[in-house]
Image (cartoon, rainbow, N blue to C red; front, side, top):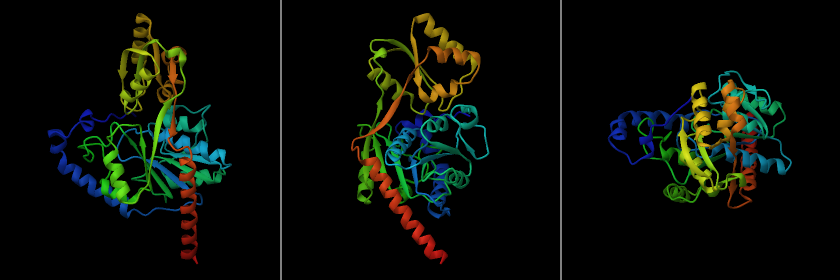
Length: 347
């Protein structure tokens, strides 16, 4: 249930990426065709897709949560649609944050369910219809830009400004999910996260194509107890280094770092080692919210670690505070246009 991107994906392209170029070429042909030719089914609610160009995290889930909070402030009832990556359930399900476990519904779905109604489904159209039946009037998809079979009214593509698109090669030679030119055609806007420069070329390319862009940052919630604290930081996310930088920015001293694959489920031995190493050196264990939800409801050692753990929470903060509402407005306008076109076709 875990996935780990090869480190060479995030380095300058070398012989490994180039040796896989023929396979990447074929992958690009298939993924590009799926993106451009795939038939998408409309549902009776506006759909915002929060995606990214690449495999791996870029801040999609915090972005989706930020949009949902903005929607709730204006009286809407948003709902999240997720594939439930990392979970075992293969039926469409409304997630119960108090009872479901990450092993069943996935870690991201549990985080989303704290904020609004969340449906997991391998068949996103079915999941969207379930959300509409629950009274949701704005659907926010966490991922699915390249592969979903649901009509998208606004596609917001999130790019990490430090990692960008890695070596720029398509899977399996690199992290890119579909040809960039094809993805550019179908996205509505780009969200650049952070103040690095790795995303700048893509932002300029989008601007030349008439696509708007927004800027945001992942901001940690205040944690004064970490100031000057020696910690053991561990993370099973796509970019653990981002988490370690956040912990350091909060004033903690990172004595130990332990990185695990994205969506990793910690074994009893791994958890026991983390507890023993932290206790031996007098360190405070710190981790992300995604790691914490994967520990919850697990074996006895996992519960013991949770009791000691300090969870570092982050929020996606847009440079322009009006940006989330602007995105919602554009999605709703596109939805009205889509419904009008559907009605004309039906008539």
